[in-house]
Amino acid sequence: MTTIFHRFYENKNAFINPCDVTEPLPGFPEVCITTFSEIAIKDFVEKHTANVIAHLYSANGNIPIYEIEYADKKMGLFLSRVGAPACVAGLEEVIALGAKKVVQFGCCGILNQADADGKIIIPSSAVRDEGTSYHYIPGSEEISADSSSNDIAVQYLKKQKIPYVVGKIWTTDALYRETKEAVEERKKQGCIAVEMECSACLAVAKFRNISLLQFFYGADNLDSEKWEIRDLADFGLSLNDKYMTIALECGSAF
View 1 (tube, rainbow, N blue to C red):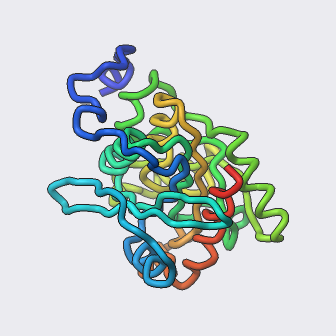
View 2: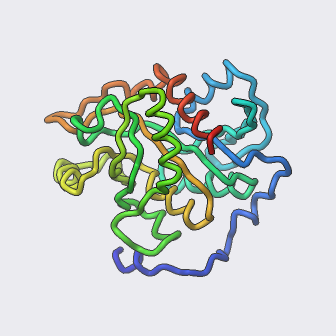
């Protein structure tokens, strides 16, 4: 697999391109907000004015893309599917529709309680322990986040005095193969959290030349003798208004 992952093809024209299945939508919002919790999306839509302007289609079902307004700015809102390949497919199609800047947030597992517990987590970089990113940029162990996008989030969190940390993320394809040995190795690398899409989405952003701002909130805890599920079961719904406000404020400043 090392040979396959390091055999990068520079040609940007693929056999099937996003533009082959998705046409640009006139007036599509340049800034989009996306998260991974369907419950969180439904909760927001029920409380605010949101109009369906497009859909993402797959065999798993159709995902509506909403147009919302915040701080006098129109933005898109859509659900990202869990897992790097599915998430990236949706991101590609949203970019093809017309998105230029994306704010993406979701839950993660805590690997370093002392640094990350109870804080908003902003990725400085991500360990590429997934397969999708290697089809977008040449092979490397890590991928860096865009510092200018991170600065937007940091400025808002500082202003609101919301605890945060900027640090390295571990992106993995296999949540049920986060072994003790793998966790310890990633912790030694400096990873403070683990999730499944960060590095792949960063690669797409670089490849498609769009701005991507990501942040995460800790759900379950892996920095203990036994796994602690904590609030993973509610997918962040209890603090959804807080997380969505952060995303919207970042989107309005983009």
